[in-house]
Length: 252
Image: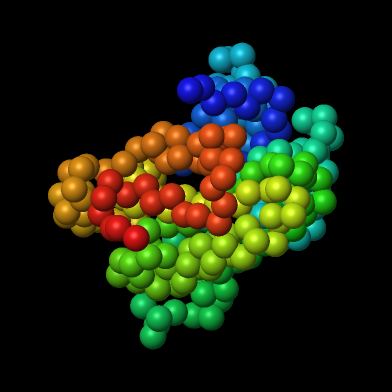
């Protein structure tokens, strides 16, 4: 069985590196025309675009801070114009831990920043995209294992935000069902990315990898495979679900 997304138009937020990049490239390999969103890393986004084009795919880079409604609205207009039509696939991937902090020590501004980049962004991009979204399309949100297990030390805000993404996914799946737009999410566990290079000490990564039944970290390409599946017709009867991509570390 082959996934064929030829003729589909996709937007991936936070697609300049790591999981976002892997998703954008995987969608393009299946034939989709892909908009690669970035906030500040223009060079990285352009590198993704060039990599896709080098393989014969279609891609554009589009800048926007997805926590700002005005920039999101402009981005969607640019994507629709440059890709030549309404979207069929939206992947809300942008997000991040920002920094580790215990709740007792957390400034309100940091809480808001974590919520904005991980949860508000999903709302803003989805809202704007739905005005230019084909019926029968697919939305895939990127949550996290933290939404299930509460996250690691100093990650309560991040876990809460990703839990919000999970619940948003379920509610939106019901809301958009009349338009036959499916809404699902993926919840990655420990994935070999710069996220963990920055925020997770090597010894903690090793402990988690050892505790994972498959005995290793996951790769961004393995998360991308799950996203592509959920965006494709192979998942035509899957709606409001979370695909847990964690090597068996946590069972739902």
